[in-house]
Length: 114
Length: 134
Image 1 (tube, each protein chain N blue to C red):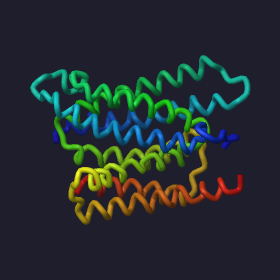
Image 2: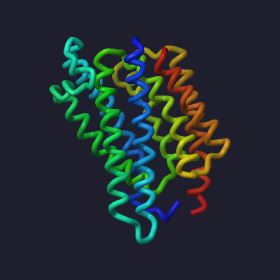
Image 3: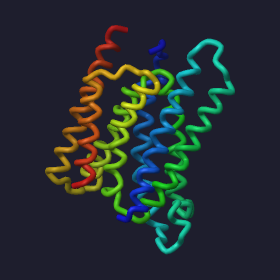
Image 4: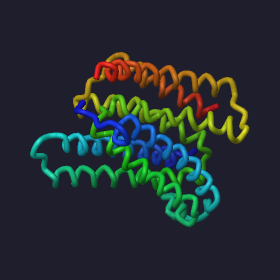
């Protein structure tokens, strides 16, 4: 795996995580009273745009590498998203949720590497 | 968490629906991408030639469906809970391969599946308790 491929993998991961955060932020604000429709539309579009980039990069990577090489990186998204949702979106992250997320990530890495 | 609708609008049901669509789409994507793989073309780095495969289009349809229910889920469930739970798909894929395709799963892989299940249980348990109260 070249450095270029690794950079693409990380870019796919980063755009995926950022996309999820934007989507959650958009959908959450629909619950508030008098929410701004334009703001929701912008956040949704940014989220969809980021996830589209992630999708096509992943599709390109799948043509070259086995899923078992690519999937461990997707597993990392659980820990990263939980952490960013807690810091950026101010969601409560209990110790229990953190341990759960870490176990899921390590499980995914184990499943996909063997 | 705001008031949750029941029936088909139940966010937990929608989460399950989203997971099933992702599960099917992952399998279709891998097959579709392999079918049309052309590593010599520079374009294939961004995967756009994957669109030549009909399987990829079916996968895209499923992804759109899963996306719609996922957006709905996000309205009601915090990301710190919904996202880890959505990764149940990572144990469903190997288990489906084992049951339906007769693939052999190594001991190490079973250990990984077990780890994910324990992690899911940890994340899901407080939710189950919360739901009982409602």
